Length: 371
Image (cartoon, rainbow, N blue to C red; front, side, top):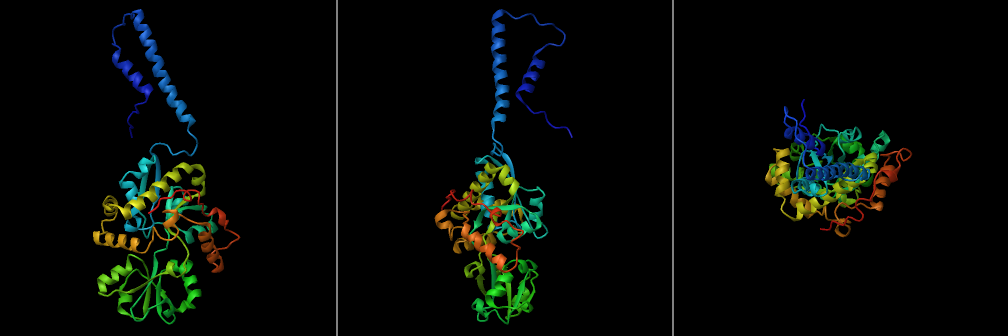
């Protein structure tokens, strides 16, 4: 593969000199005044070349240079719940901060944490439980911001059958395999449930629609909407975060080494992303929506509009501590509550996880991207 020649100052000077010199004739000596002009021009060019090299050598390691490349992978197909990152990309917020950002779409067959650990991406759309657990497996990743103050994980029931979570005993509960290492141990302990109540959730809402005694898990803006559209009734929806489930979600997670080597780039990405979230939910979301539909052609305008409405109604981004401390905020107390819950539920071995290294608030505590 032949690469184009980069037009550096030295190649430009040499190219100009070659073009200006006749091949078969010896040029006559220039007059004295021309010598002075040539000398002055040459010195100016030399200072330019040396200045470029010196400037590059003076840049501090980890500093976010103009258009420094940076990649972020989401945790699912593109949707409104990723809108802030797409908005920052579409409206040039990342470029304004000196970053050339690529947002890569995740999916059910994509293991983002493995790609992060392998250095294939710079940061990943993470989840506190998985990030903390990852340290047991040698993945030294760090949560640096939380776009969502709540986890959109919900349980869905039929009206008149599941009117509160205390009605769960005796019901058949459809959960994913991942639930067994995240919310299910907490839910089981909190509401005195049994493992025998659970059945595999296959991401199909028809078993729920067909049986009023079935309860299923879901994502706040997804399954409840699908059930309403397909079955013609509005199910009862219980957001686990509103009942004591502590983790943040839609986080920005980077390897510890990246945070240490490229703090300026990480800070720039976090700042632009959280400004993107404010602009997406409070302004015109159409720039991000165009990119979302480009990445995920199955996403429709009505689903996006519903997602945006739910995010605003539930305070997913602007609620909790974000209302006063700004979008993306994390607190030590909240992170500790998640860690303590994981330890008490035996979801993590505290002897293998240095809790203080699993997150940092340095990139968000003074950011103050207020609603």
